[in-house]
Image (cartoon, rainbow, N blue to C red; front, side, top):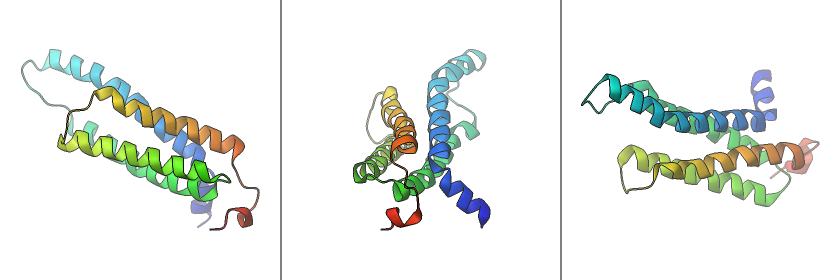
Length: 135
């Protein structure tokens, strides 16, 4: 139980790190696919685990957003966390199921915004005790 409490108190750090890793994952994808295309001429495939990273980052970021939004002292930050996470989730679901054509770079917007919002929240919006953040 102590570890769970410790993770909750570090939700902005976890969220910032997860969002940064997600961003790096998105940046690296085109280069890795281009390199792989050179090795595997004519095949349109990528490692199965590469596609699961999106879902893993999204799941981890859900909990980081949940805990950060719960502990923030500013209501607009809470709304921004959930709006950005929902936008990121919609982009990832759209990419997985190819529902409509979006430029690949669109995923950078909510990802970078989540990174910045976690840093902002960590420095300017943290409650000093549990009572100030009660729902």
